[in-house]
Image (cartoon, rainbow, N blue to C red; front, side, top):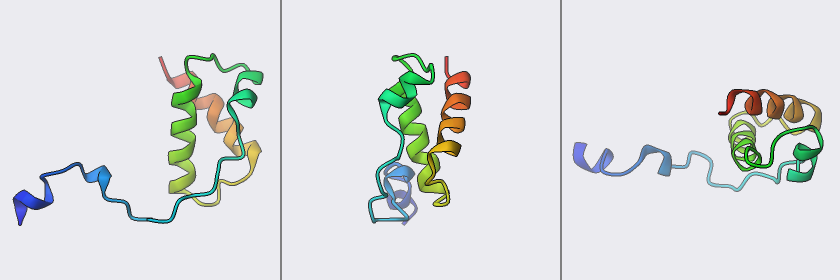
Length: 75
C-alpha cells in the first residue's frame, strides 16, 4: 500500500474534480498593467492555482493585485 500511494505525484490527485470557472483576467490585461510577456504564462498558472485554492477569488481587482505581486516575485 505504501508503494502504491507514493508511486505517483501527489499533485495528480485532484480534490476537486469539477473544472473551475475561467479566470476573469486575460493575458492582454496582464500586459496592460505592465507584466512582461515572458512572465505572463507563469502568472496565469499561479492565479489559477490561487483561484482554485480560494473560491472567493472571483473578482478581477484582487486577482490583478495578486498578479502584480506574483510577477514581482518571479525571476
